Structure formats: C-alpha cells, structure tokens
Length: 211
Image (cartoon, rainbow, N blue to C red):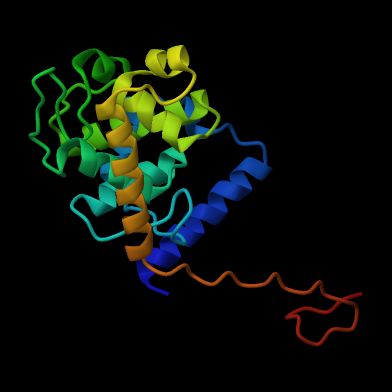
C-alpha cells in the first residue's frame, strides 16, 4: 500500500470513529472552511468505484477526488460532469454566462459561496456541492441529478423526469458515458482486511496476560 493510500485509510477510519463517538458531521461547515481544507489537505485515495474513491488519471485528478470524497460522490461521475461541462478547461465560459470547470452560473456560484469560478479548486468544490444537492433532491437518481444540473431542478420537477430538451438528454447520456469510461480506468479497489477474531482467555498471541 502506498503512503498516500495508507494516510487516506487512516483518515477514513478516523472519520468512522468520530461518527461512532457522536462527533458532529462536517456537512455543516461553510464553503470557505471546506475550501481551505481542500487546499491544505492531500487528496484521499480509498478503494475505487465508490463515493470517495480515487479515480482515473485526468486533469485536476487530486482536486476532483478530494471534492468527491467530501461530498460523498462517485469521482467518476464528477469527472464526467466536468469533462462534459468544460473539457477540463478552467477558463471555459458559455454565452449564457456560465464559467469555469464546473460551468457555474453567477447566481449559482454565489449561492454556493464560490467567489472566483475560474479558480479550479473553487469551481470543482462548488460543482461537487451543487451535484450533491441535486442527488439529495432527487433521491440519489444520477440521471435526474444531472438533468437538474444542466436544465435546473425546476425543469426536472415540472416534467417529472429528464426534460424533453435535446441538449439536456444528450448531456445526461454524455456524462454517464464518461463516468462509465472513468470507472473502468480507475485504479483497482484495495482488498479489505477481514476483522480479527475476538481474543479468548489463554491466548498466547496477545502482548499481555488475560486474567
């Protein structure tokens, strides 16, 4: 196991222990706090193919993996979204006014706490947060969440599904296709060690005596 993977595994275990001990969740932290953490901490690299996993080798891979881990996203899905939105170009802009890697509209960026949508870390963090919001809004349905990211949640609610817009329907299929491609290219999942058998009295494998 690499040093980065070991550090990530320790962080994962610490997080699980914190929740078990009743520690308050980090979801309530403000965007600026999460942004500072994103800039200061190394990217987590747990097993691939699940939310929080490390993903395929793409531009801004570490930043994408870190944002995906913080927001419980499949990193392949977040990669697919950014590729469809901007082609990994941090200076991308649209005629409608969307900017940056995640192509956030100005009002959406402000609502997410993004002060500079052309900054890759802020754009990725804002896009990840907005995608997480749409997944939560639509029961974890990736197709509906992506449609909401592209056409707005109101359109998805109004039509009761993916809106009948050619652009939105193509966008959803494109992102899902990219995500499938990145999942197949992601590092293999790390084996999970079986839990140790409980100790019994008289065991000679313990570094202390059992009374």
